[in-house]
Length: 130
Image (cartoon, rainbow, N blue to C red; front, side):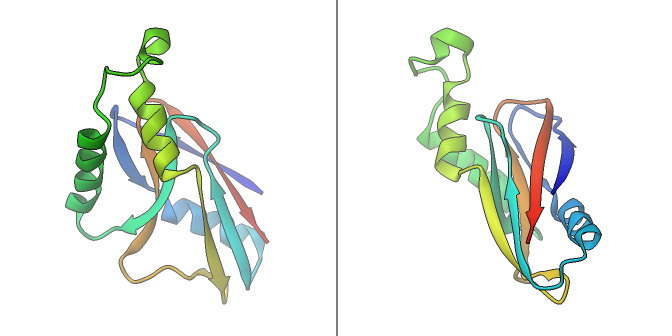
């Protein structure tokens, strides 16, 4: 198991962490198997999405913002981040990627992304390779 630290810079953003995950995979020595990526935070998510056009990431954040507007939820009375919790729950905290020949079996345009909904802050990402 490896832990990756990711420093986010914005309230909401998508950060490509594929390179760091590949580094953890190489250190594991596993040639064929599964790579499980998990973020243990209630206001962040892990997704697999396109890495070539940054507009895809912004479009996803914009769409979620329209679906889940800020400031209209009961939890906002506690710490004003209910929308972040809802968005993270919809996307989910983890992804699993197949490994073959010591490489992640991602598609040509795919990357593993940490999605921040309540930043900026430092996030931990757990990578388990089997």
